[in-house]
Length: 270
Length: 223
Image (cartoon, rainbow over all chains, first blue to last red; front, top):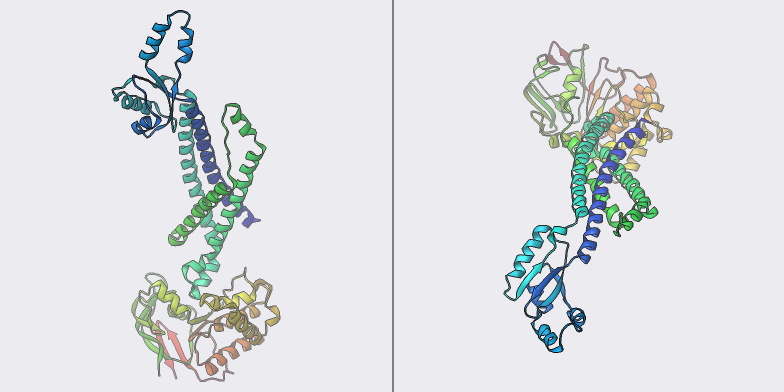
């Protein structure tokens, strides 16, 4: 029962670290999905006095993904009744070219300004409208949330690691007799401590399984995903293969590193 | 004859300031059977501990199996201990392990395959008359049986030296006779050096032996 309690303590501690990392990953994915949505809706308008090809725009900045010409026909058609055909033709010839430029990612306000300056350096470009002021407030809030989650995850990892270290010292104390007997027969440190490493590895695997199962259920039942879909974000919160594998690597990394620490630096209080 | 243990002006202290063995010079030949006697608190166990590196010499030189024990490194000490068999008065068996696995411990440490270890363990458990108890745990056995297991463990890896601290101190007559016959057998058949710390030398011993007596910090050989 005591042994089970010790296992549960380590498993809960590792689960907490893994959950905080997974939450951070999920938030990051949500923001990335939101960025994609914003990027698809966002474009820069360029007014030029000569025709530009898509390749010419792309060569101006690596951020530019594609461009499309904005047709003026509709506007001119509306003026048909009010102007003579001759004036209309004159206007058609003198009217500048309008382009809508799409970017390969959602830019920051600074990047929008830089892009505007870059495009305006071309003498044929008359005007660029980047709509920097309409930069999304929700997006900024999400970025802030992501940073908070990141700091929170680091703090949890630090505090939990100290708890795990204490727990492992207890294990070391519980197995001290066995380890000292093995030492009397010349067992090297790694062999004496094999029991600690075995426990650490088993608990890391159990913590990963619990985390994977929990997040799989959240993903499967989709109540969070439904809420995100309601604001136009489609995202997979838990990728069973990659996320489970990453969690296992993190759990094993933490537990094995901390076991090494207590083996290499034995408790001086004893 | 080769010397397994050489002590020159060896001083040992139990606690930091209390010198318990003072400037002792002695040697033990390979293949000999040696008793170390002395009153309680005379330093018998301290001397034995220094022979397997649990206590470092305070002064002087101590060499065991060709390895200098002064400021010995952990890896050298582990190497030496893999060639020594130790029997303690309190058995020091791993209580979470079966009898079979306890006897196998030195073989596991020395990296023997499970086939070799299994055969050797079965043979030794047969010698100590505990083959039928192989799957039990130490706390399920009597004190005498536990000491026989400890004896089998000490012999498992064919050590060059066996150190025994009061091996029959708390045992019944039958277990004591098994222990002594195993120590005799190891010494006479395998030429293993045996050093036994004890209060009483058994009268029925069938091998020649040397006797060192510790008195007031001095180690004297008794003819």
